[in-house]
Length: 394
Image (cartoon, helix red, strand yellow):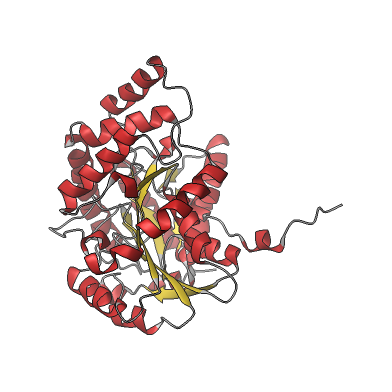
């Protein structure tokens, strides 16, 4: 007998990177040598001073509930960090500590998504955007992210998609899965014209904010006073401090929405793990050389992987300007993206993600994470080259 759950659950998608991770893990358990370039997490350990702060918090009896909004010292540290990095004034009363970046997406999309509403999101983009939009019954409207624009959004194209039904616009730069970084001039154009659409809220996913290359400066939507009263910022510790498993993120909310977000926190998870919050405080207030060293290593790998991908038969690759992903164009190989990603895993032992897992505009691409050692990346590229040389598209 099938229990009748509500239809909305039939609309929930998933993040296929975790399905690929599960398959890669299963193959490795069978004795296969698998190189995982699929999952998007740093291969560095969390810095020792951060780990020690969590241990110390447990020893100091931080074992109970915290405020649903997060401990005040951490919210103050977030506000101070944003002030230092972005030269913006943020109040701790606007900061909400959450258990990972996805929670902010969940909250924002729940606030604005309902049948009859439209929500714009980047495509190719993080798959949870569309999944949550469809869950609410809202209409997902993909904003094309094109290779010929360096995988940045077009302000003109984005604005043209706004209708009287648009409730929320989701932006992501530096971007997953493309590594694209939107130039300031394009953001300026978008923000200037958003004045014509005062009832459209904006969710800016800036989880990769500190991972930019080639002198590219990160442009935060927080730096635009004209939209601060309808802007939700998503950021956190997972990528910047190699803390994916700690499940710790934060968001900055406009005052009219903050209380609604707080209530969602109370109703869903009560509060964030106490020890993790003290670890997050140590991350923000402690030495930052660990971040600089990790980003420098990612930069070195970035150049290595792009050079290697360009040498593969039928493959081209735009140079990513941020995050730790390459999004090579595999159109000339003759393969469909998901079929190629599956064959590379099953036959060559290299885990990647097919572009369509990130949206309808992802066909013709696969995503590689270069959050892996240069040695493993070199081995993966060699296997991919051998595979493409001997295997024609199915």
